[in-house]
Image (cartoon, rainbow, N blue to C red; front, side):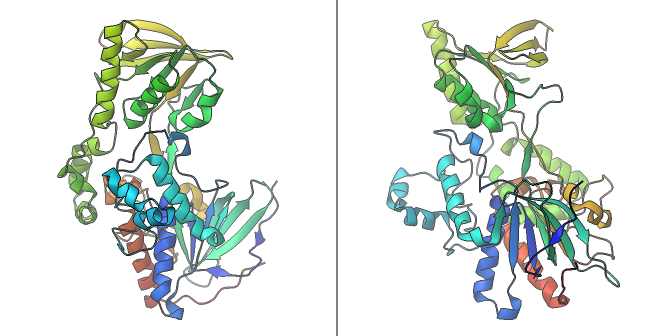
Length: 445
């Protein structure tokens, strides 16, 4: 049984506690610092962040050599909100000594590895505000006479089940990111894994003879291309239910769905219009592949037909009907859907590029979740300023980043509106403080 949580040794009440420190809460930390730089002393907002990873990291397992961002560098952590910010991608390039070189590169889309380095560079400015290796296990309202205006956030430090510390805060911002999705029947293990582990797992593959990739989206195509390039003696089999990879719609007009004003339109729209917009623009973000990558895979497939040495096999209109992993191999039965014909394949590994789901913020809230209001479909009711609507018994602010596609639109989990969103959250925090100043709290022992 874990020990009772101890209290923050500083007996300090934070203005904001952030759960998670990926790009969204990193952008928030920047917005708060820039706000504080010009605010009067009594209007400054103090924040601390807790991140369960041991260090900053963003999709490290998919930093494939040659893979580029699918969003312009101008949609970095700050530029859409504050083009003069010192935390812009352009200033990062200047500090790294590559600004002229990048301009000569004539691209809006840096490599994924370079953009990750930009995020690490920005995160490095906030080491004093972030505690890594710290997992939030629950949140409790502070008992008061009348509505609760503060929360106790219980944090497990350093992976120790017994070292629990409580931090008190007037506001909470949850940005827990995405969770990889595996089909329930997938026997996850040494031979079967999700694509987000790609670069962590492939070093253990020694001279593989066959590798299977399941999925039809960008990650699946990237994994297929990477494995085909990295293991020249191996057969790479791509399995998906479509006839072919679907091109991503990144045309200029379609990209308006990621404009800041599109969030206003989506939020105000009736529910049937929200569903229509998500359906219409599904191909801008989900199960779609950059056209250049589609052309490259097709080029390789065709060239192998010409030479007669076929290593890239596409099992289209197909699914994995059965899979069994052993210590030395994985056996999969691939079913061709139109006829039911089945092909038995033995491979060194099976990689599921089957996407991600948004983490459920309410899973972290514990008893506080009982005070969070929900929509008729059971999803959280999130206001336009990204604050979760709560009962009258809870007056502190609980904000959420990412898990708002149902209320704020398809860009919610993407970088496109991140800079604007955190600016709106800072404005909301400032307005709430001005309207109803919070009294000081002491941590209960």
